[in-house]
Image (cartoon, rainbow, N blue to C red):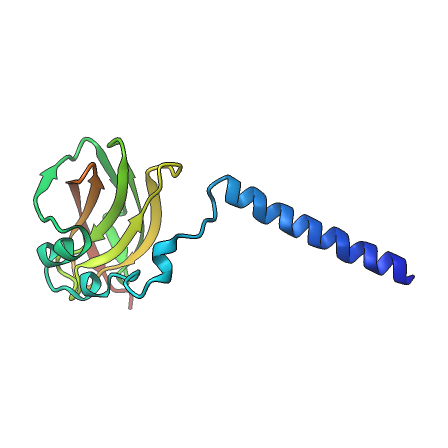
Length: 159
């Protein structure tokens, strides 16, 4: 292969790669959040909290929750084999800022916290680990208020 062909391939690959990154950033799929560069980006105290109230105070500064089962959909299996399950949480509450998932029976009740931007659909899909049978609680933060919905999941261990 000639030297000109090799240079042409390198230029094309670089152009395609930078175009893909630019398209992803403009679509809101990838972004740089200035907060993530600070040492306080990871809410360590919230994830280490032993109660939902303590975790919420660390995350939001508020622990007053408005039950809203009709505005929050939690799609989860009724049985988590070996304690692992895929769940979906969808919020129909306008201006959803974050979605947090709590499992009160876990040693650390906060299992996930997603901060959303206005350009993101208010749905998250994730995999969770439960330590024992019980409730799964989704808490949505929107307009400086907290909303919640709950479902139950049973733990089974395969032998």
